[in-house]
Amino acid sequence: MVGFLLAAFMATWPAVALAAERTQDSLGTQLLAFIDSAAYLIGSALAWLIGLVLPGSVDPSLVKPLGYLGLLTLLLLLFSLLEAARKLIWLVVIVGWVLMVARILIEAFRR
Image (cartoon, rainbow, N blue to C red; front, side):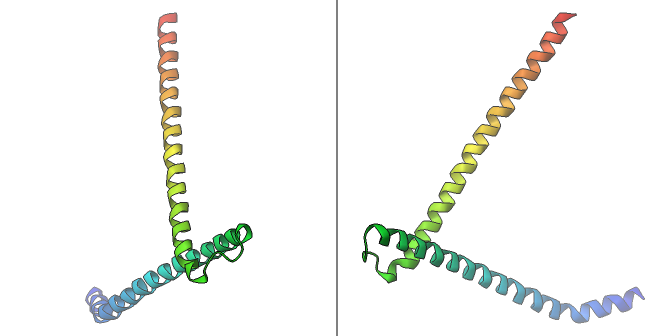
């Protein structure tokens, strides 16, 4: 029985590998398409905002480069917020340990 299942699995292995390869390729293509769409949307929004201040100053061919620049800026802001949060968490942990050691010492010397 096990030999039969193993033989059936081995017979379908190339199809499984091809399906996984197609899925990965499709996933990569979908991811790049999503990033491109997000960049276009951000670029359109930024071009609209710039157009409010300086009408007619943004060439439509600059929408995607503006969007990619905006997307990179958002990523940098996100990572800087995460870095600031990490520093705050370290501060809370250090203060917590200091308070815990202080309480242990107070309990030890109270006796």
